[in-house]
Length: 475
Image 1 (cartoon, rainbow, N blue to C red):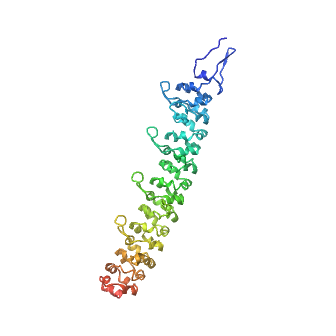
Image 2 (image 1 turned 180 degrees about the vertical axis):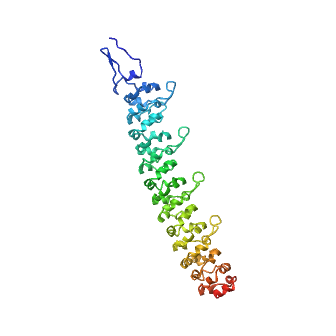
Image 3 (image 1 turned 135 degrees about the vertical axis):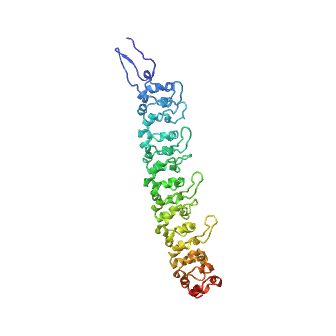
């Protein structure tokens, strides 16, 4: 009987053709079969021969899988690894996949070269949750943004170490968009609070630092912050990394931020990356969603760890107007907030100026600054606002600056004082009042002054009074 031999080929290397009674049988070779191609032989295979292995690729030794290469040549125009089919990837165990190309030409020793898989093979790989769970951090570092975007609903199967290894780094031409920027809305939705906290958080020294969620694309960020539990989990360390548009993206879920996260908000700007500060970016709808207690926490953290005044003076004007239209919010202003306010912000308080606590009123200042506050707070108070204050509140304002601050009212506001309001003014309160201010008071108002206060008025102060005014005050 004459035994027929096949030509040396991929198939002959995987299968044994045995003569038996003139017939033949083809059987799968076990992994320890000496007829399997060795690592040395695999290294010489063309792309076509790799494909011809079919699903029997799973029978290759570990060493043979390790030498699979990304190198190209006339025989390998694509490269062995890129030639692998989806069916072949499906036939391999997670452990085998993580061996692919770890010792091949042009490879990084010990790191699976699966980033070179074709689109269809990669799609097959990441559709398997066990395969995704086996991807090592070192492999993650090699992936392109487009490959990260294909994890889909299995994104949450990545290990903590793999999630932490994701990076925002970009490079041309392979990674014009970073891995974290490439995470899709559906992928972020699969992650737990803990998993979001470790996104890209690996530090060079091996420790876990602050997540890089600030690098998420806008659509993915929107999905993340639409989840109130995810917003509540944002840490005080993550807050300073967020851009103004990300703060705006929080929407009304801003009220889900923890106290420490609200305190970490900053007014600081950067001409290139953050031309608008976080506090300034808060919208009117967002401020309306916060309780008075939460508003008083905004931006109170400091590098020294000492709590500072809230940074609400940095709110944009539209948001400020919304805030101070709520009397309960104004009533919550503290004495360390009021001195930070501009004249424009004092005017915007409108009729709710009278909702300030006594301590807050007493912290109003007459001081000016040629750059930031050319008009002092007391001088900025309008006549309408004066009309809403009771005599006790007028007395509080008058007591500022050693009791002489009433003279800092603008002449329109001063002239709107009523008899009941001036009845509380003392001789000391009137010391710095000018002749023009005194003359702006109506006869009825002058008649309401206490006798001792009228007696204290100087000739200089009274020189512009009309006969009617003199008669009204008896001075």
